[in-house]
Amino acid sequence: MKPKITHNDGCDKLWAPWRMAYIDNIGCKDEGCIFCTKPEQDDDEGNFIVHRGKTCFIILNIYPYNNGHLMVVPYKHTSDITTLSSEETCEMMEATTLAVNTMRKIMRPDGFNLGMNMGRTAGAGIDEHLHMHLVPRWNGDTNFMPVLCSTKVISESLGETYNRLKQAIREELDVD
Image (cartoon, rainbow, N blue to C red; front, side, top):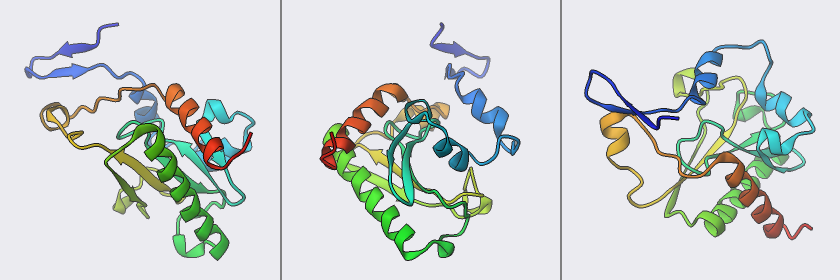
């Protein structure tokens, strides 16, 4: 496997073939909503679901902006935050807090980007199902790679991040 390829434009490109699955599936609705189908499956590890609550779950983003990029997702299929019940809204914030506390323990970020994009125009990649992004950030994590070559470096595998988060959440919740 060749880690980088130089093109005629003079810019080195990092090879990231896993991104093609995302690109190929943009706009595909054949398999249904991933935020509805993934929690129905009995494969949390394979689907990177690190925590299940009563009304929402926490899942790793498989196309992360940074290591540890998580999403907190209600089970309810909705694209509008105003349709969530008080219980669903409260649990989403509690799960977000759990994710922040856990991330602080295992990855020690200097800050976080938290947010939702409601609607395609607002930037939502999956606009039919509301979800909260939690992106850990470190001092100096914005470097020349994204600026010069539109490339982000992800330094830990999703599987390793999943295992560390799953264990840390269990410890945070004091679950055996």
